[in-house]
Length: 76
Image (cartoon, rainbow, N blue to C red; front, side, top):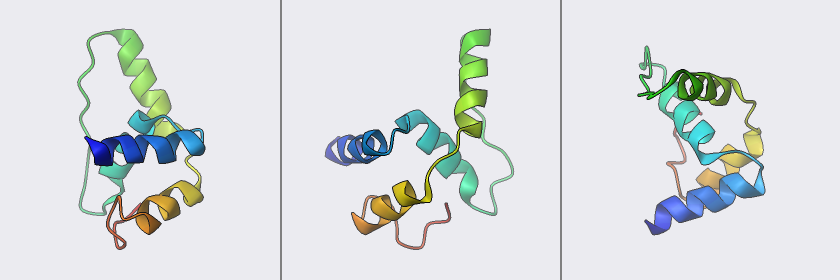
């Protein structure tokens, strides 16, 4: 839980919803062909699509790596 709170704090500093970072991080590895997200409604589906397309500053990923919250060699 502490790691998740720290990741959320970094995301907040960069103005990025943690859900957007999670979705895009999951899809960043070159062997990942698709990321499936459960949605309970059309609104959630649209939100996931928006978050998947949200521009995430490179500095967010750099800070997550610097703080060792994700692996230094993780594709982002």
